[in-house]
Length: 479
View 1 (cartoon, rainbow, N blue to C red):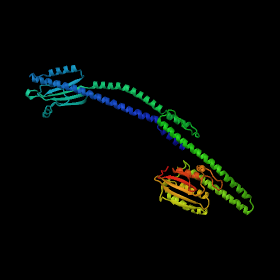
View 2 (tube, rainbow, N blue to C red):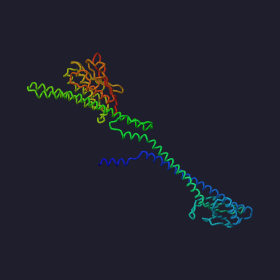
View 3 (tube, helix red, strand yellow):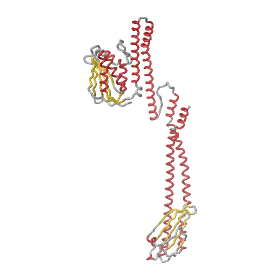
View 4 (cartoon, rainbow, N blue to C red):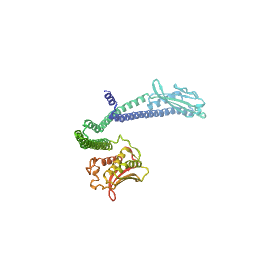
């Protein structure tokens, strides 16, 4: 129950790929549109200020120019003249609510109430034709304010002029807001349409993935046939191909296990049946000599069964897919060959076989499984000792090439006909039915060599005999 709850929690926390794609597509698009709207608003507001600033500058310059022209004509203008000129300018421009204040340095004209005092001092006089713009809030309304100083000309008795002009921007700002609101409506509609199109596109794109999910969920555990998706995108097709490769590998592994179990059951049936028969006969035997003979047969049959079981276990360990739990380590192949040859010398002497080792390489470092490689070379040497005539010779030779190590197990026996050189690597194939062999030795050799990315082949020795030619690559990478 606890595991089920944990699984349910994991299912709840899983994120939807479709939802993630939609979020990462729609949200950035929405952010870009909002940022674009903000930029458009700022640019529009900037243009409104620029237009207002240009108008305020012209208005202030026109009032100051009227004062200057009156001084040149020696007919000083009055405050009424300035106000008349200002009203005419305002009526002509139609710029909305504009207020102004003007003051001359001689004190003759002082119109309006400036927002800040107009002071004629030395620092101001030195700041020729100064203009200052600012945005201010007055009575909760936005105003654009310009203060301008126009220096006079004492030689022409032309006074200096301070002008402050303020324009109410509330109406223009409201118009800008209305424009932005009107523009937002089509943007929202476009956003909705684009979101629907994106959702439809994502859903349609992920449909093959959903189909693949449904195919896997509804498939029986025994069904290892390839998955088939028509018109799938490249990425989904690659996933489907990877799953098909996994299914094919699993099917091959299951078939190999089935064949192995069937072969093992078939091969074990005979020695076990013989062992049972021998024990039944031994139980009926009355004489000590007959009982001893029966027990010797039981021992021989048990020894053969043990040898068969050991061979089957070694074969199972060396098969593809079963090596994942067996580590590969850095090992010296030359030392392994020398040590194994030395260990098998007593057995060779007992069989009157001359066993020798010819290592032309002092060190041969590879990455491999020492237990399996040991089993490989024991099988080769023992097969040679077992099947060649007495007083024969067996030589284990280690050489190297730039990329490979080569181990040759050569004997001077009768050899193997070309027709049988490939068949000896088949499981349970025996050229001769004599002896206690089970026909697995060379099959084990081939499996171990293949698990180490090597090759093995049978060659004819000169003048007669057999060479088992094993090639192992250098610098193996552990799988």
